[in-house]
Image 1 (cartoon, rainbow, N blue to C red):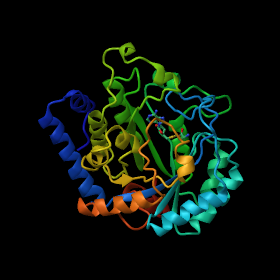
Image 2: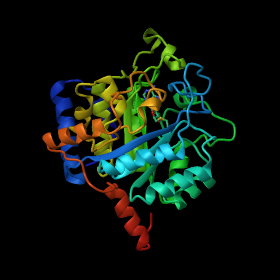
Image 3: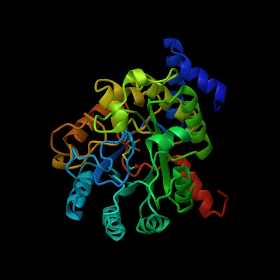
Length: 357
Ligand code: SAH
């Protein structure tokens, strides 16, 4: 049964180990019943770190003079897609800063080429125009990830300033993308300066209303070259949500309860915050997806949205093989195939049958 607002707030405020364990066990049961034991692996390709936005949390924001900017060539992206195929992954995720220099037609061409390899394509390219979203969907893009970051409008405006000519409403863009036939993914940051537990409850209620196909939840990790990375911890008002792995996992568990059939990644930010247990903790309280990084080593360190991004220096792919072994050991083997969310499959079936959505 979907938890109420009061129950969610109680769970987020309660730090008694037995209660936390009960919440996580319940989320794990729902995960197993609704989406099974398999883990879907998505190969992440960070194709450009150019960005016109000035998000207060993000290290690749416009105007950060301390990073070298890059944009991968089509041949480089296709080499990553080939690697994904060889490793048995079913999906490639193309992610970037909000980069108008990524030409819409060139992106469409990449999508068509990757789809021709029988891989699903997810996009995470920021706030883009309807024409672009339509073009990319027609080219075969399957999914789009766009986190709303926080549902507190005042906090959102502070950490994610508007950009002239760009849509400011990410939830509205998500709804439009759903109408275009994308599987939609969204999510939020946990522990943004100024974020309270009530804000997190609102975030979880938004997830319940929107019922996204994918939900990414990660701790906020301060980057020294950003405005939010400069804020002193002592400046935080009381009621501040800590950016810990514990509360992040509890939010993941609650997301599973409100959206039982969503695909929920165990995020890289969580694995960065808690390199020993982060990744597997989320898998044991609701998560069923991992997004290994396939970006070539020479670009990975430049895509520094937060410091210390958990990216082993080894060759692309080595970590994926190790991960696949580990997943078998813990009884949660990697899936073969695309790994669409059951909710999306049901929705598209009812659409084909002329049902309402
Ligand atoms: N330009 C795209 C992709 C951004 S990176 C977009 O805006 O959608 C993907 C996600 O990384 C963001 O949505 C944000 O939630 C997360 N992220 C960015 N900076 C972060 C930080 N300092 N700590 C933790 N997560 C961060």
